[in-house]
Length: 202
Image (cartoon, rainbow, N blue to C red; front, side):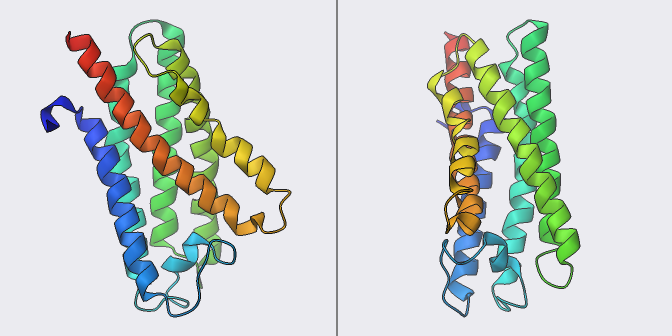
């Protein structure tokens, strides 16, 4: 069964599982009340706020970023020919890899005393991920064997962020929704790669 999954897809799914697991363990150690309405995800990784649990979140973020790099590189399988499609795929890969590096940076320098370095990494990850969402969505629409509706899912984080920017409680929700949509998108794209691989093998 696993042999039918491209290696990049397996890394993508593994990355999501590891991050969610480590994040949940970190949450269990958080000593105060915690909710998406009043807390940022990065607070789980702040040793000043989560002394015994920060290490789990930060390691989870570093592993997420590292495991996603093979996932992004595996998207080269999507190239079915044509320069425009290749440009979209390479642009998406670059956006994804830069986002991963920013994520790793933000977890190496978690929120707390080194907040400026943390914000630099987190901002780089967020901005780069936008390019990843956009270019993958365009690429999916151009690939004959892809699952087309997944392309529209790629725009949901952008739309939701714009909407939440006008919501009083949206300050923290923007981060939660963006990360949530991103993780789901990675799983969907991993499945899409599997579907494309099986279709080509017929």
